[in-house]
Structures are given as structure tokens and as C-alpha cells.
Image 1 (cartoon, rainbow, N blue to C red):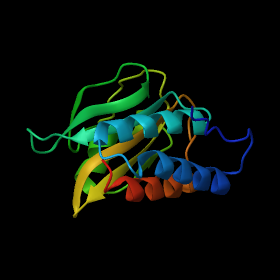
Image 2 (tube, rainbow, N blue to C red; image 1 turned 30 degrees about the vertical axis):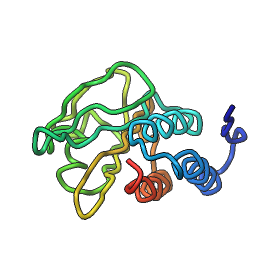
Image 3 (cartoon, one colour; image 1 turned 90 degrees about the horizontal axis):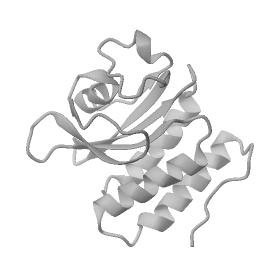
Image 4 (tube, helix red, strand yellow; image 1 turned 120 degrees about the vertical axis):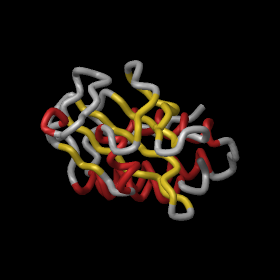
Length: 163
């Protein structure tokens, strides 16, 4: 049995260091991308406070410039998102992290869960191409900051060869 939960109140730098170590331990020797995304979605759910959705959208194998729902924790979600639509699509289209303090102020926001107030979406890039995005949602405005973005960007870089 795995128990990677951090101690309550762990500051962000050691929290993200521990998250990266746990994700590395779970994905290092596993070649199945879905298994790795599922375990990481669960880790994110356990590690991060004040979130209502943690998971992945994958670049579609069949439709160019479209994301398809991957493993996640939270309420049921939108299944397909075109690149450049919503926060996830913007991250996929630009290849840049999207740190959104108020999703209702984001042009074209897709409301999969009406409780979501803020969002952090980080692209996973392999060989110069976005292969997935890591999506974190919170019911609180301005939940995520630059430390969160840096922590998830490090996770995305580590996962690029494992999903």
C-alpha cells in the first residue's frame, strides 16, 4: 500500500519536492501511460488542498488540435476540448502554463464544474509537441500562484517521457 500524503501545513517548496519524488517513484518503472496519469492524478488530489479537480487531458491521436479527457479525480468532466478553447485548450495551443485566478474572467472558459473559480493548467511537452495538459481546479479564487505553477511544471517535465 502506498501512502504519500504530506504532513498538513507543509510549505509549498518541500510539498512539491515530495510530490515530484512520489510521482517519480510511482512512474519510474511503469511503461503504461494511463496507469501513470491515474496515479499522478490521485497524488495531486492527495497532496493539494482546496482543489475540486486534478487530472489530465491528452492530445487526441485521431483529431489534430483536440484534447481528450484522461485520468482524473473529481466530478465528471468535459470529454473533448478543442485547442485554444478554454483554459486547457489555451495551454495546449500555446504550450504555455495558464495560471487563472478567476476562470469567469477568462475568455472562452469552459465550465465543466460550476464550482470551479480558479485554474492552473500546465502543458506536458515531448519532442516540442504538447502531448497532454495537467489541469488543476479549485473552488476558491486565486488558489494557485507562481510556486504552484513551478511545482507542476517540474512534474510535467518529469512525466513527459512517461505518459
